[in-house]
Amino acid sequence: MSVIKNCGGHKGCECECEKEKLHRKLWWALVALVLLTLFIVLVVWLALRPHKPRFYLQDLSVLCLNVTPPASTYLFTTMQATVAARNDNARVGVYYDKVDVYAQYKDVAITVPTRLPVEYQGHYDQSVWSPFLQSLDHVILPPNLAVALAQDETAGYVLIDIRLDGWVRWKVGTWISGHYHLRVNCPALLTVNDGKGSYGVNYGGGDGYFRFQQAAACAVDV
Image 1 (spheres, rainbow, N blue to C red):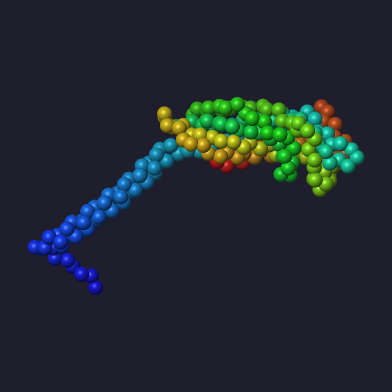
Image 2: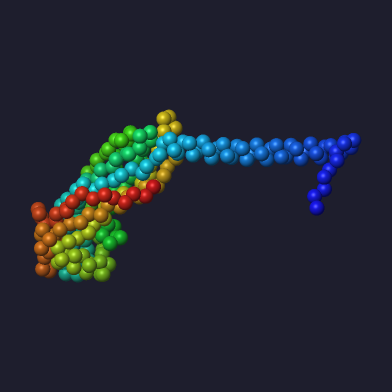
């Protein structure tokens, strides 16, 4: 059962009532401030409608892909990837900071990271990069991956993932956000000898040996 305090005529009771009123006012002021902040965030989000940048792998040229005999466990490669990014935001700009590009085969990195230049993308702007990717030293492939690569080559198709890893910042007017982690995965399907494959392991990397199939959209996570 709640007790109703009668503050009339008692100084101590009046002080308690004033404190309770002050606490209630502070509580409601705090609630109002939180609701106002959430409302402002919602209005800004509805006005800006921020979107992640879109990435596309336009081309992948394999200049060299060699596996050393006889065990075929050491890989050396040089590639050139052409990656495009588009900012689809009408009111939000994008800074690309410390973005590295590298190639993977079945989740194993086969090139060292190549750093892209720092770049700012305005509203609806598009950027294109064509970095060279290579393994500075021989990559040691696990035996199962060496077998899988030989099988893919014999079948006539090799799937390479071009990955980007770095940081982006958003710009709205004069305000610039903190850094957000950018992860991009671009699958690249390569045909070997125009899809005819090879008999035995023959990694020459000559003209026309590996051919990029078609431009592909990339998975983007920010």
